Image 1: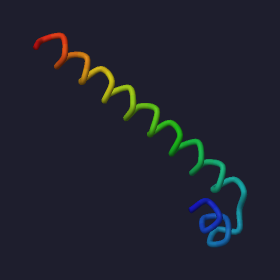
Image 2 (image 1 turned 60 degrees about the horizontal axis):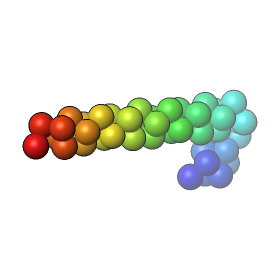
Image 3 (image 1 turned 180 degrees about the vertical axis):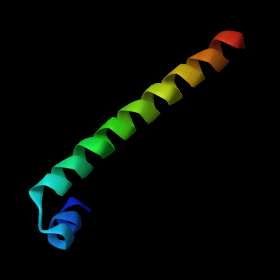
Length: 44
């Protein structure tokens, strides 16, 4: 996917932005999943 962004935009700046944006989004999603799962487990 990053190779496609690099080829389409011809810019390392947009490629870097997309990479770090996706890492941050995955980190937030993993944290939300972890905390929601712990809340359900704790209430059970």
